[in-house]
Image (cartoon, rainbow, N blue to C red; front, side, top):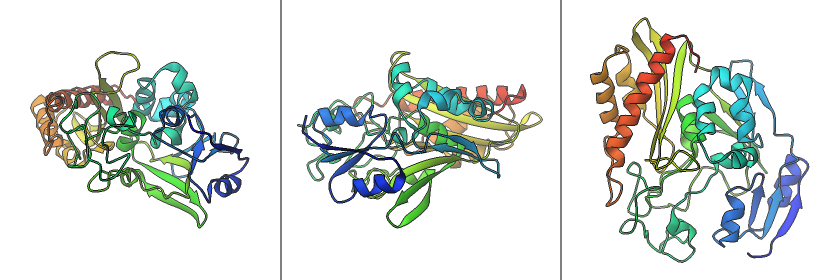
Length: 335
């Protein structure tokens, strides 16, 4: 592992100042960053420790939203009383991610910024446009089963975004608050992560000199039920082959509003807004409608040699998630 300078910041301004002027990285939980530094995939000249910044609170906002600090640990967020009550889909997604030890260290902002798990990206040797732009994508003609996408891919990259938390946040709706030398700004969660296109090395909308300070969740949907379904090769410490976060609100036995987001199949947390719209007015037991919505959600999917199975798998996850969320809504469960 390369040598690097280490700075511990005590406030946001100090963190920004320490980060400026050279190739730097912010360090909080470090659950992905340290791995990639050890592998020499990321090569920061300086690590800026932000653990002492006052960004570890979970606070309600007057308009019904919930503001989550950047350094809130995944475990704390998953078990927060307000999250369990009003954002059950987020709690479930967090508790199905990684291991207990990693959840105790991993942070909200770090999870949002999580790098891909593509073995070609991480090996430091294979051609990888994300690591070395213009070198090629080894996954397209290589092994492309587990952590490779069928939605949002390009000829330059097919790596899937690995976060469970972000799938739930995409369904809920959120705003990412950032601070930089020129002040604060907000980025809609759906616009934060970038599809690879021609620039797979640009993974998000954060500028190099900016720091995530909070993620603010949209107000919970009224009288809704929700669920997070994660399909994977094994039940512990495994990334999703396909996952679905579903939030459903009812009027009687009809769906009034729905939100769907997918993981394990997209190059970013994948919100299915067009498919959501087709659920409005559907009966809670209309499996044919759910299946049609699932097909719509996966329209345009591009399979590769080893991951074509993800398309029918994701459809099954969507149908089951809608069914389960609707059932919870009917029982009076909150999202």
